[in-house]
Image (cartoon, rainbow over all chains, first blue to last red; front, side, top):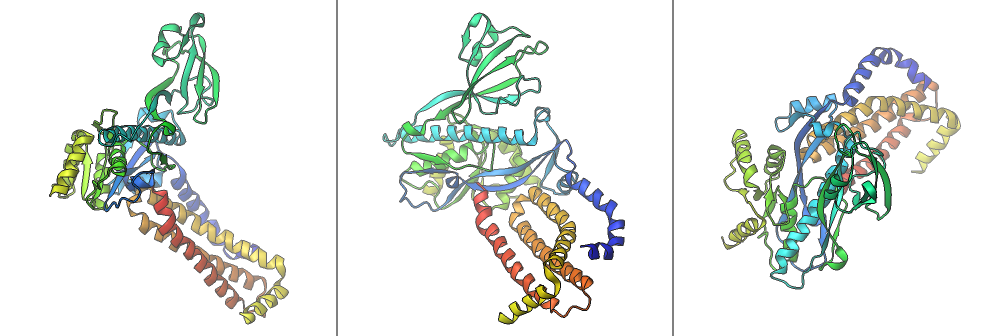
Length: 345
Length: 122
């Protein structure tokens, strides 16, 4: 090693400062949020249902993911700047208090909630046709956001379910809506939570006297109970977060339960959240999602009516013919009807 | 094959473990100084150009092969600098080692490209 050091000493000496500068550009993060096109994820790789396993499915149903890079490095910022498909925005205020790891945790939590909603909507829709199908669930209130003034910040994890809180005079609140009425600013109260692994813990949290808040956001969702639902389903761990796959997950689950193949041999993708009534919601990064679909040559791309106009503008800006594949749907049923009409054609 | 192992034995007898290891370490450190930024650059470009994941993975595999070539080249250079009048066929030994390790690296790269990436995209 010494021989090499001696031989290349001059080069090492002169390149040392530029080398450090390069490393700085490669690691120093900037407070921006970069979006760029990602790819397609076939839903049957994420969710498996033990039902009609001998059915032949000729097409594919995929969710669309985009790359969301919070705090890109200087180098990534420059690469994104020169990528015509990418968008760079200032980091949203809601992200400023979170580390990149926490942002990812919130995103995965969103994905879990969305898969649960998809299972409920698909199972309940299919139940009307096939009474053997049943789905049962319980409502949960989980921690979905934390402010930097939250007491015991590290002890409370994203996704922990709220169980109860002991308020003034020992009054117990079992619903988050009851908390405000039995608490006073500046006082500390015992909150009980349940972790995802079932562990239950109690933690004292102070109600901030300046904001009049405890510093937590909650989300209420329905968690499917696989033990009392039929058919059995299993969910793989995912590397893709967010709730925008809701509609496509619902379509794919419905197709797994259905006797007929609703894909008709087509490459189906799309984006849009799903609520428990089967309504399709709008999403972010429409431009990158449409361009991802275009790059992947999909046959049908579903999206909510709110996002459709943006998508059309994106297609026109990039000279893409959208007439044959971009489809606006307000509900899950509309998406099913559209696929059925393609089969008739 | 036998001739190669005889050559390897002769090489160890001539250089000893310490000199051989030190040369390899030098080759690894100096080649890594060059290629670690290359990996980071390609990794960061990959994150922004995820829709070109296959192309960029091929570039990463190519970089890994280049890293291996440079590692062997610098190891050979260090060995010659340590013992300019060495009798062992250092060129042949490093060439064979480079080809074998490059084939292994290529196989791992192809597994990543065709098996692991599709399973990660879930």
